[in-house]
Length: 193
Image 1 (cartoon, rainbow, N blue to C red):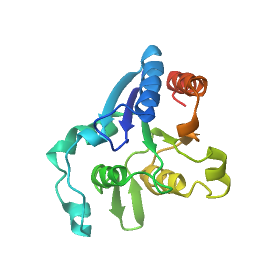
Image 2 (image 1 turned 60 degrees about the vertical axis):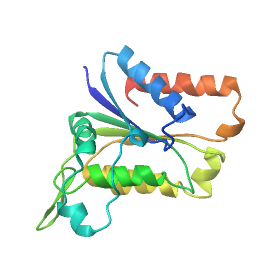
Image 3 (image 1 turned 90 degrees about the horizontal axis):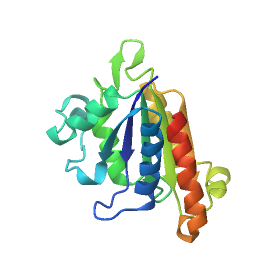
Image 4 (image 1 turned 90 degrees about the vertical axis):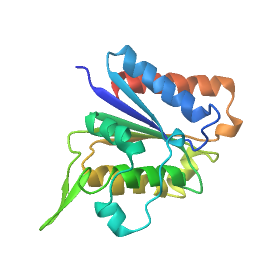
């Protein structure tokens, strides 16, 4: 069954093609080859302000530059986000983007008895590159930055399941290792896992 897949490229550098771009491209190739419709978002190429107040977050207008991104997330059955780990978490531009597009009224609403999740029925996949070994980030740091994104943004708004793939020691990776990672991402795109 064909699904709509939105791939969010979160590398902050708009001027170069990084490993994150290569991995996102491979996922898109796998998804497209399996007949899925793929929409791409390049956060670094979008000009938008950061939110500074609670009232902006809760009731301010979404910047026009982010309307297409919001619509791409709302139309997707599966969302993939790819970014490099910076200081143990997602880069600031990724957080600022998510704060804008995952607002009340779009991703959730406040109800008398709590929060209503508006993005149920969608799955997500978080793909992260990092300089340290991925096993070290999982075991010593408990994947704290990725777990916060998984739990506090994706699951909070209704995404399930939310899968994670981490690629570590990227600066020392051989071409054979990168080729294996690309094959892994193509397979994950093919199965939407």
